[in-house]
Image (cartoon, rainbow, N blue to C red; front, side):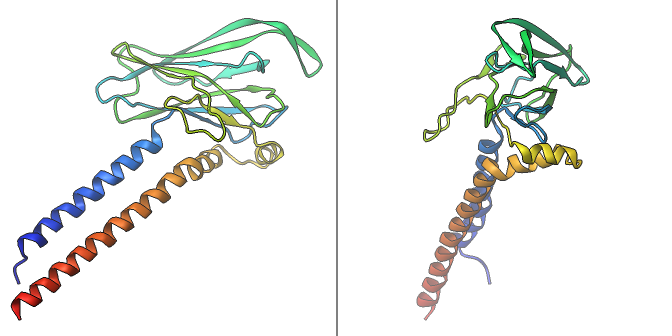
Length: 240
């Protein structure tokens, strides 16, 4: 039995609507520069992973500058090499000095900059991860790292806005590291790798986004299903 014009139009609308909804949901959930760790805990040492997606459709990401908090300096800090990128660490004086493990610290790394070599970078539609290892971390629940992302066309994205509890997320939030405490330290001792931190991060903000996306798809399908039933009933009525 040939399909009516309305039914054929319905067959075109459903895939397009679903594709649009899925694309919008994925883009919103993965656009920010983020930081995570599987073993960072207050008073301890750990590995920090900064995930940097490219938001531009035409330019490549060629630089990342990370501000290390001077009010909570990391006395020890090292960068993991990334093929095709150079890394520079800038040290600054801490005034007044702070005490770390019983020792006075008056200088520490304040800025870490990753810079792509010629012909390298993060192309549109791709992402890269940059890792730091150090500590000790402060006795706090979380730690913010302001970051600036540079593009090959000369533009920059400044991820520096603070996230305030109870308020809407800013457009360019600074990456925030959650210091899980004893659970994270225990995980490191028992061999838990960084994939656990990535999974936990995805189950957080991205998990909520995926849930909302699924509910939206189900609602769309229910509405379109009702439209299809209405068209079928109309055809039966006209035929009789």
